[in-house]
Amino acid sequence: MDISALQQIVKERYFKTDSERGIYHTALWFHEEVGELSSAIASGDKENAKEEFADVLMWLLTLANIMEVDMEAAVAEYLANSRKNPAK
Image (cartoon, rainbow, N blue to C red; front, side, top):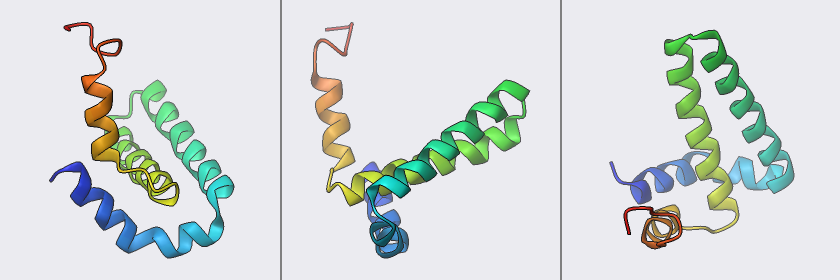
């Protein structure tokens, strides 16, 4: 699955609720999920970390949707930036 397809699925499932919540409160949820991922990593719990990685990605895409950021384009631009790519 490509990033655009995943971002569209996230938008279809969560955009109404998350946009009504607003960017600030949605960002707080994202931060909470990052904290849960950090805890899972620190405890060495791979199964929980796997779930939390997915949660963090879904919330990140939700934030991008609210801010109207095309994540596939953003990642492509990031990778093309020679300052971010030591191989260039």
